[in-house]
Length: 332
Image 1 (tube, one colour):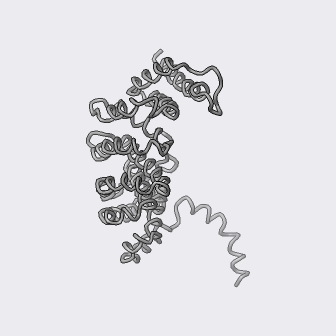
Image 2: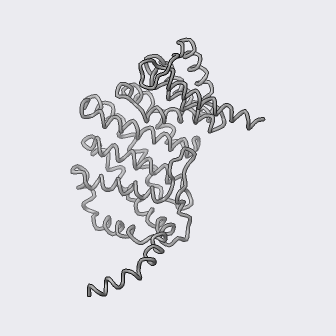
Image 3: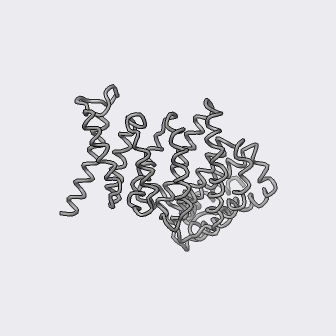
């Protein structure tokens, strides 16, 4: 009976999301009559927010998706209490279920931001996110990772806006740089550990955030970037040995094909790819490339080490080797 009730709740939340898509907003391409009345909308919004601290993750995820689908139409004009409610949830350290639910909702909201929402969201939300990512003794890896993913989505949107609203986006970004660069530094300075894929997930989100800051705001970030350099190098060097053990020598679990509860990949390979994407961005940036020029020999050395053939690639090469030899001999 308990499992049945959970299934019904989950399906109800999923169906509500579909109802919102078809019946919430007249004039939308997906709209089908009848439209939900204003009174019904108000009741639904209130009930959904009260259910965001459900202890069951799947239920919480489905509710968060329903909230996000409504927010696309109603927030902030018609749902002014949404952000204050979510902020109260994530700031309540005695209700971690509520923190999880609010974070899940904010991840979905931040992935679909409009430029009218960013100026309201970032100043209100980022101080709370900074508290979360800097408090591993309170918040688990999942919540801290999602906090970084929200930062990534928001900075991506700021970057898209900067071409048109340069002064406005700069005024939002500058106060963020010092505290967030310091937080990135504190996470990256810890050596990569082969037995802790959750740590890879957090570091990978940090690398993605850094990439966005550099791509979009390199002129603003230069003065604060040096605090990240040594920790980033520590991550780069320490990840090589982990990669060798897991993917080249095959003596440790590579966590290949593994995903978190939201379907995000947590493999070591995806982490290494993100690491190199960031390094390419730094080296290719006219303002920051000079910073790594003094250590280019070491950078090349470790980069070549990452090019070693992986355990997974070896059988493929051995399979094709017999057919390759005659070609080679003929060329001689």
